[in-house]
Image (tube, rainbow, N blue to C red; front, side, top):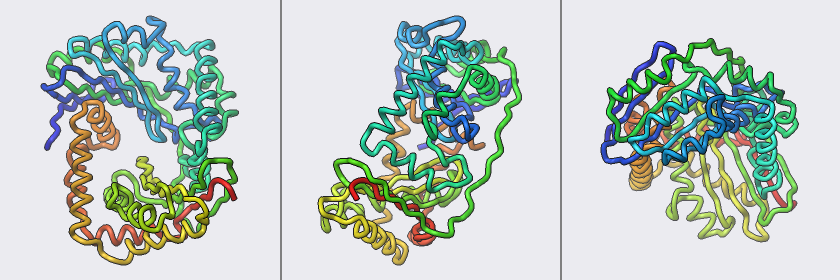
Length: 412
């Protein structure tokens, strides 16, 4: 299944991808800005995420961004990651121009006022408290990332290192951030749905071409050196179940190792036939729940294994049994049957996401960000090319104790 698109760049540097889905009655307008938490000053973390909130504060022309879109039947949202900030609008096809207009308006006329800044700082601080500090297990990734990275800015999560960083962001810092990063040459626009290419191109040109190019200044940062020893943390918390979280350093998004790691994650914890579920949940009853997942950042990220322990199970035993499963994967070739099973699951997930214009829009934008707009199509062949030996070699490389940060979290 090949996802076709048209790719071009405006004179001001805005990269644009158009994808036709004639079966859809709605259109997704997705705009990605090449700025995430890794681009922040280490003393003012959480700024990229705070700015995601500020982008909904209204413009000098429209004081209420959401109400403007609601009147034309649109839904919108956004997310911030370590690498990027992404905004999307889903709107009836005949109202597409409203989405393009309002996106161009907030790119050029965002109302970064003291009042709006104060409001959004309070919103983000409350989010920090509710979701990360006062929520059971909410600070797991704040802790594990800080322990796993010493020099790379993945050291902190997009929400920020601490609330005090958000509190001290002032109007001058916010305006400088907007002027530096929210420029057409630092953005990628994707329009996907039942569209007419020529009409859509004209609308995009009409609304975005006049926004001027601006130089983007980026902070330089260091990549994380190879770990030489295991890191371990004990964090006492009053939570319903004891939790263990292991983090292993893995490859970057464009490396072949990323694709192999994705399949390894499925082998370990995707479905009832997966190794960790079958052996450690069903048979040995070490965990009530266990899962694996990838950080999936652009730079080399982390492979996570998280498990919730059953009553009377010791942390050290739980970790030992996880490593036993990892050593098995690192020592013996998986069967053709197991590889085929996870390949089919993975392809099914890819094809399912390709049915949704919002998912496709994000994937197309990320591909363009990485310098390869066709990455969304090449991903299929990359996964299919993975062999049993690839799994063995990558598992042996990743799952060493010196490459691991372990966190015991809960009652001690």
